[in-house]
Amino acid sequence: METQSLISLDSLQPGQLLARGVARALGSYGFVSVEEFVPARGLRVDVMGLGPKGEIWVIECKSSRADFQSDGKWQGYLDWCDRYFWAVDAEFPTDLLPQETGLMIADAYGGEIIRMGPESKLAAARRKVLTHKFATHAARRLQALRDPRV
Image (cartoon, rainbow, N blue to C red; front, side, top):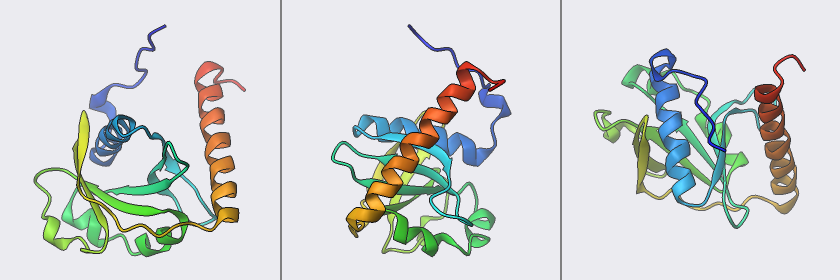
């Protein structure tokens, strides 16, 4: 059964278009992902990916220099993932991005890892909590699509 998209690309903001491409790229690496995920109170990551071996990646999508420069909380996300990446389009000045983080170049249709983020393994207890929260979040999103009135 093929699912038809409910959202027009024309209605998405630049960061949302990047997130769409990031999700597609993660899928090609065997990951599943959710957008706008809250790992802890006060944090909201653009894309969180769950890999085939249980690895957790956080990807922040930046659509412009101003968008990047206004993000003062990205370092708080490092404690919630095994690897951290920025996702930007091909025109973004990547020299602004910290070298000690991962880098993806993406658009609405896909993306590519340019620089692998360094691995910093999560503690087992935090991984378990995040994996459960990820699954719950994804299931609630699916239920909302199937039955918006619930």
